[in-house]
Structures are given as C-alpha cells and as structure tokens.
Image (cartoon, rainbow, N blue to C red; front, side, top):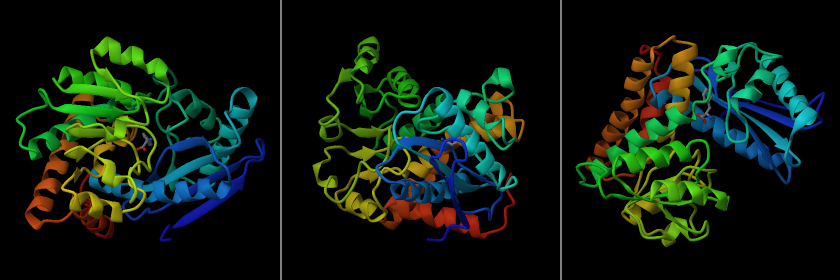
Length: 342
Ligand code: PHE
C-alpha cells in the first residue's frame, strides 16, 4: 500500500463503515467520488476504496488536472433509503470535513447529485450538487462524451476512419452507459447493449441497437467492448473468452490487476486504460466548479481525452508494450514532477 491516508469510520448516525482512502495529494487536493454499495464485509469495501483511490490519482494526472486521487466507500448492509440514507451521507460529510480540504468527494456508483446535497450539510468539499443548489450537477453525460472521444481514438488505432459500422458492445446502460449508447449510435456505430436490468431493453429498442443477455454480452463477437458499469470484469480466467479487437469503456478498475493488461496484450486485444477513458466526470465537475471554465473550455478538455489516449496508444504500439504500462509511466512522471500545468 502506498496511500497517504486511509480512515475507517463507523458512522455516528448510521452505524455503517465509511471508508475514505486518500492515495495522493502530490499534485494537489485529492478528489474521488462516494460509492454506496452492499458488501459482504467492510474489508471488501476497504479493498475497493484503496484500488479506486489509487486509480483516481492516475486519472487526475492523465487528465492534466492539478489533483490527486481519493475515494469514499460506504459499506452498506443493503439498499439505503430515507432517513438511513441521509444518516450515512451526513456521516460521509463529517468524514470528508475531517480531512480539512485535503480531499473532496462527488457522486459515484450508487450516489447522485441530490445525495451530494446531504453531504454538503456537513462539508463544503463536495462536487456535483444539482445546479439549483449551486453545483455543476450530474457529471455522467460529460463522462460519456469523454468516453466517446476515447472510443474514436481506439477506432483510429484499429485502422478505422470513424465509428461508422464499427461494432460496439456496451456493458451497462446506467448513468454513463445510457448517454454513451446514444452518442455511439449517433456516431454510426453498430451497437449491442446489455444490462442486469432487462428494463433497459427499451433503450436498445429505441436506438435500434441489439440486446444481449448479461452473461453472454462480454464474450460476444464485436470490434470494441465498452464496459460502462462496475469494474473487475477482466481477470486471468476471463481474458481468454473475449472475442473483440479492443476494450475501451468508462467503468473504473476494469482489470482485476495490472498483469491482466499483459494477458490482453498477449492476445492482441487493445486495452484502453480506464483511467484515461473515464476522466470526463472530474474534468466536468472540477472544471465547472473549481476552475470556472466555460462549457466550450470543458468540451475542449473532454475532446483532449481522445488526444491523450491516441498518444498513449501510439507510444504503446511503437514500443510494443501494453498501453496501460505507458499510461502508468506517464501518470507516475506527472505525479512525481511538480505541477506546472493548469
Ligand atoms: N465518479 C467520478 C469518477 O470516478 C468522481 C467525481 C466526479 C468526483 C466529479 C468529483 C467530481 O471519476
């Protein structure tokens, strides 16, 4: 472990474990969303927090933001609603406030902009409150825009001029996956969708996209596999089942560990590092709220995700190494060097 700080709180109000991992503040304030999920044991939530926080450090560095990485995980014992949800979120607010501004949170899997309002009752260090409450709101559409720029860069690397007729399989039609599905279809991709909620089949129908069962979709033949839900999809025992040319999606921590990138590379499957693909959320949230950037400036930064990925893919191709290794090296160099870029 090389995290700067990890704090495990038992929520005063909720009684639930609230874990905050701050991986690095070398480039500036650590940022990372608040995940709310049911875990069999709080130690599993700790593992998640540690890995997700470290990924946020690379994500911020590769996005050129003067920030480090952190993450909050509420280890729930089941779905949270009403007063119990409010209690847990206020516990998070106290825990975030305890870092005195060294770490700021935002929405993540399981939490929403309105949840950020509750956290804000206890701390000012929270992004993405609804616009009517002075925040930048849902960052998911921006994450989708950034992911599309990345997927375009991948298509170019595969020798395609654009996304016209490129087969994409989208895994997960949630907050990010749904706008991404629309963007992919608009860009001309031939799309297939899956989701654990089969009510999302309506989206596939609406978009003229195919629908696949959740247990079949990852292994169906396609050009680009687009993970857009929870991570950990690709491990040593699943890489062999893939039938795609590339994996590029906004889900955090798609690989069970970095060695899986070598396995993908060995199979000739191009893996676009998720720490680059998924940066649209922080680019939007921080750009709008901290740096007062205009929507046009933010759009330029989101498009920059495609440029960063293209450079990483070109270097990886030239050196014959997995793109993830190039991305990690670049992130490390930026995390160790003093921050000079804005
Ligand atoms: N969920 C976002 C991510 O994983 C976290 C975030 C978005 C934090 C926007 C702050 C602002 O990147």
